[in-house]
Each structure stands twice: as structure tokens, then as C-alpha cells.
Amino acid sequence: MANSKTFSHCSPIFPVPNVEETIAWYEANLGFQIDFKWEDPATYAVLSRDEIKIHFSQRDDDFTPSAVHTALYIFTYDVDQVFEEFKAKGVVTRAPETHEYGMRDFDLTDPNGFRLTFGQSVNH
Image (cartoon, rainbow, N blue to C red; front, top):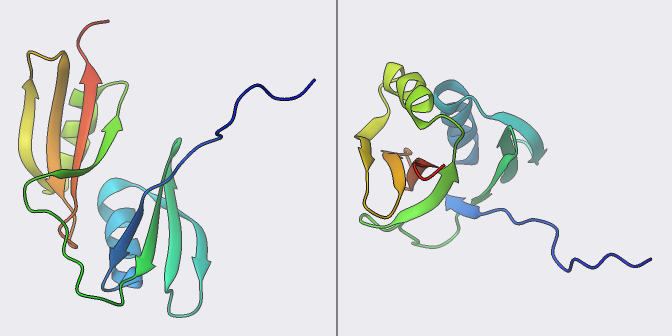
């Protein structure tokens, strides 16, 4: 029988000025691991932690991430535990807040300017 689903998964691709530096930061601060690296030094890489995969591509234009909008929202099973882990690394830019729309989340900004928000539903 044919698969009734159309899509499998998706991954953001972040254009960055230095893929190698980005890899090192995500490994050291967020616990991501390298799944794939292209060229040496890398011009493309895929990093993952648990089921989350983020692709990074060597930027070749003047792209700048938004300073006010979240680039990636990562849903967690225990947002406060994740907050404590990242707070210990000194990378959190906004402490956890519980919002009226039913999420508890916090922010950090990576060295490339991408805002990552980590959250958990409070409506279990």
C-alpha cells in the first residue's frame, strides 16, 4: 500500500559567515553534534540534537537575521531543564516566561544573530 503521507520532515538552513565557528559554538553551548560536513573548511554542515536538525550554509551575500523575530522555535519536553542547561553556558538572552497562548519559553541568540526560542506547552 502506498504511503498516505506526502511530507517527511524539514530543516531550517541558516546562512552563516563562518560554518566552522558556528559548528564549534553549537557543539560547545547547545550540545549539538555534527551529522554531515561538506568541504574543509566546511561550507555546509548539518548539526543535530535529539530529533532537531539544523543546516548551516556558508553565506555569500549580505544576509542579516532579524533582530526581533524568532528564526527557529524548538519544542521541548522540559523547558525549565533546558533553560538551566543553557543558562549555565551563559547563552540565554530571555528567561522563561509563561504566555497566555499556552506556551512557556525562553530565548537565546546564536553568534550569527539567529534568535532561537525553546518552549513547552503548559496546556498538557
